[in-house]
Image (cartoon, rainbow, N blue to C red; front, side, top):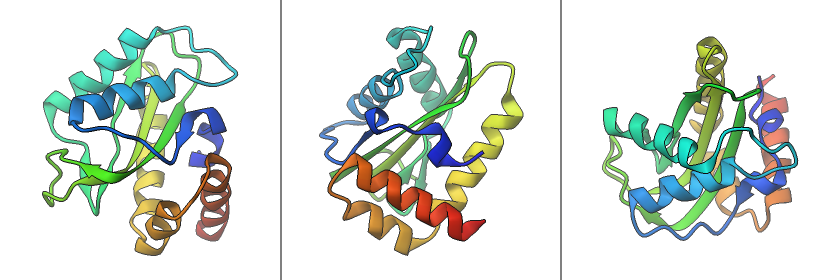
Length: 156
């Protein structure tokens, strides 16, 4: 499943202001709760899932990227949110660099395989420094989505 299929403009921001890891996780939870198809799970449940997962180990994967994720009962399908944080957030990343690009993924509890495939696809996409650079220069949510679609098409 492609990241572009999991995102919507309402779940993308190019100006996340988050002074701490906790604020960043809460903001990503709020973005995940946005969109035309209202999730039947509440914001507190999304926050809890992201924070619980983060308590196990940091989802800061390096190269200024974090991929917070989790599974929720009652979620109808996979959803994702993407945020650019120009100032960066200390996120206990494996390379100790601040995170400037967040992709959060929520999956239905019954679909761990789908979640793993989505995480792998996002990791592959964001491993490319050129892609990250393009995203960091995006001026709008629409431009972010266009970049993601273009780059996913190149990946095949």
